[in-house]
Image (cartoon, rainbow, N blue to C red; front, side, top):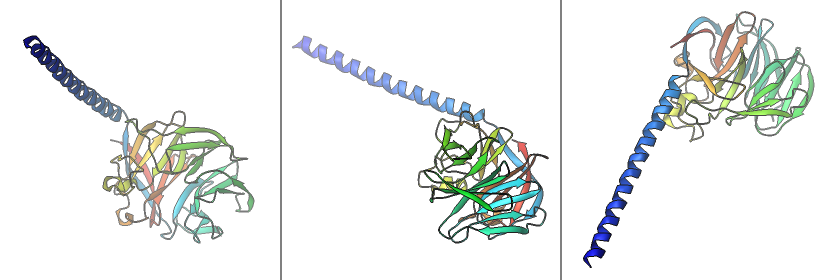
Length: 290
């Protein structure tokens, strides 16, 4: 009986030690993971901004796509029964040319490639192709939603609200390849919206990123804790290689659906322009690394 009791004591002691060791291992693993995440985060540069110029912007324009081309802004605006394609004078904000999109379409991102304007739609699986005078050349079909659109000089690059970026053949809209976009902590970055290709990088607005800390994105966007940020993404592997902090750039426009959404790049001069949905202003900015 005494021997049996001793055996029970030994087994119980070993079990307790095992649990203690497991708990210690879990804590050590968690600490290492936390340390690794912080190290990864610290390696990704964050930029703030300086406003170089402020221009007028149509406060009724629900901006979904923005391009600077041949000295003018080209803009795609959204919402059902309000969608349009516009040519805008930068210095005054005056709309020089405009066509309305049929009421059943919700226009989204747009880009200009080989003197053709490409404009996608939200849930209608349809892309419109125009010449530079806004004459429609053709329509193309694709699977999934259309959000942001840009190009790398060869392929179109489209976001669809997930963390996946699609590279598309401009003639057929067939998928050439896809890239998952990952944050520096290893988590996917969802709700990629308006896109711009700048110096070999994809810049992406994150839809409602100004509200991630309040949880209003309903869990679809991991809490990046970065209000009004633009993500700088590697087109090769989808990793976030930088953040642009645009906090307070246009405080009178925040709230509701007046979110940041519009990036344009003047390749000839290096100028960068940003605006948002129904913003009163468009800003030329200069980046400053924090």
